[in-house]
Length: 573
Ligand code: ATP
Ligand code: MG
Image (cartoon, rainbow, N blue to C red; front, side, top):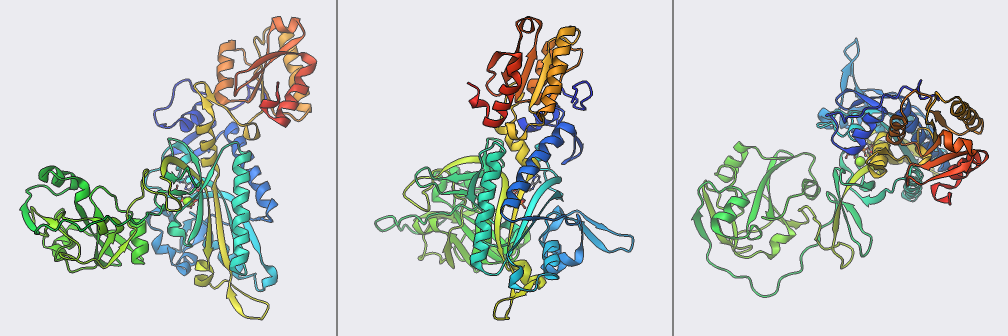
């Protein structure tokens, strides 16, 4: 490719829409342009990177007997009604109607479509296992599209679905995908850590997310340096605290006037106590019925854990009217004493004595509230957000925290979709059983963005060799110098003939401008051709990653490049 022809408009200034480095660099390097919030057009260099990542994914999916398919983006509402998700999916789903008024959506994911496809064809255990995947655009009307490709509303995903006859076979599919993911991210040149995760709206219970650790990550990952336990913070298990010794202080329950003190910060400041001596009483509507969740004042409730504990379909914070009707007090003064709805308490409440709680009366709290004496709890459970510094649930270690970008996720779905949609098969004894499913996603664009988050410097992107848009750029210092221009064109032809992906910067620009663009776009290798070295029969090879440079005889340029492309930059010694 000739740089003069390449449609890669680079920018010197950072566009104001971009907050994180990968987003800035993808715009500045001319890889993509925004068309609407969370929607991007890929320009040639960007698309080349995307296609390379897709190809790596494709090879690894094929290696585990995955078969590529391409499913429709536009999906009929009826299928989502069968699975029960048409209602559940909410505002994230882009919905549309055809001219007859029939309802459709733009696929945010494809469990329904693939289950419908398989149920009409798979009859016998002999047809299993089956692993089908596609690489395609997904549509989610995200509440906060941001960070470029990280959280788009239209984005490319690889999604694989596995169909198996029993749990053991599902296990094999799951771990095959898990290990394929490890290879995919490694080949893309980025370290992605598998962590235990929550399954969210998709269903199922065993799931891992693959996390690239980076400060710009939207997830918090907790990990134990001692035993290697790693989990998304929203999933990380809490450990019931060891019982404190001795009898708790049991002072008399006393009502105190606490005007305008309705938050834990306000009440602890007002009474001169620590937040950990207060109990937060949060009212929820679980499947429409009020329940209370009790959390120590310095802790945060994890709604995912509460929902699991309650085994409810819907869970929402109670509105002001419900709070008033249930507690007799406005928001901020609810407490467990005398409350006649089910009380679910985090384990930490077990160890509290003489706590401060809301009095269920406006502008009043109770001090010296004690479990059993003053209130009873329906169930103790792990309800709070686990945090860095908390004990590891697997060993005696302490959890540490790091931000993570979720680039992929693998799920054991079980029979959620096959049961709801009637995807069954006949086993060896002729018995009809639901197929057992798994699903496995990778965000292609998000992976590219994560690679850039981990591979850049102040000058621009540093592409890993395997996914660079082009591997080499040839930069003649001056195209006006006939000797340089000729040598550059000759090398360009030689490299192309050898199958090297190469760009020749044939522009009539100052060398500084050309070097800046080469660094910004991030070609892993640069060959600089200047008159002095040319006179000595040499050209300069520069490694983008280390900025290491060396003059090599012209005849050695191609072999050196081939060695580096084959064995990596570190082989160039
Ligand atoms: P998140 O929690 O980040 O919203 P998710 O868990 O809903 O993502 P999945 O349904 O597991 O996403 O989708 C599989 C993969 O698709 C994710 O691991 C991620 O890499 C990618 N992905 C999901 N949502 C987006 C998005 N809005 N923009 C870009 N990539 C996305
Ligand atoms: Mg996910």
